[in-house]
Length: 215
Image 1: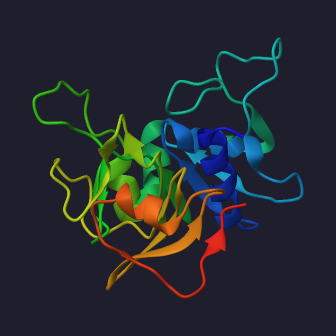
Image 2: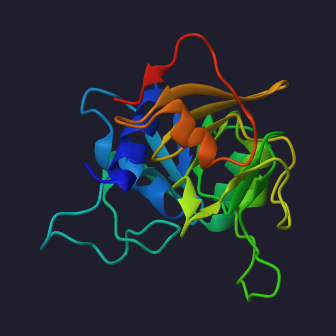
């Protein structure tokens, strides 16, 4: 599997029956494609759908059913459609069990920067600020580096989306848990070593005696 599929499939291990889960733009949207058939999870999209499912098969697309990233999706039978204001009401009332977001930077304190690069035009923060403060758990799902530039830092240098809000980071190299002591390396991707993931991470990782595998 490629890097994006590896990340998305690993995220599904954090899902449980009857959760309401928000998927951010980019890699997080792929998670809906890998949810086990016997698991009942409602996927929330801030544009006003609770109950999105995987991407439609070719020839079965419905142009009126799309996620917050404007990608065409399908909807489960019990899907609920509403306006964006009500959708964000679910978030602000703490009804979202988990949000999965991409990021430009994350640091060892659980800070996340996901909306602006100084000097470059950006359309706005979108719903991420609400998600990181309203969801019960926050997972960042992203590739570990961007064209060789490290994204997991000692301290974010871009404007923050939220401070101290990230619980877990899942990348193509491994799984990191955010703790008060710092970033704990919980799992490694196949063929990746501790030395390799540390080399690609600015923050100093906490290495436990036992490290699991992502697959």
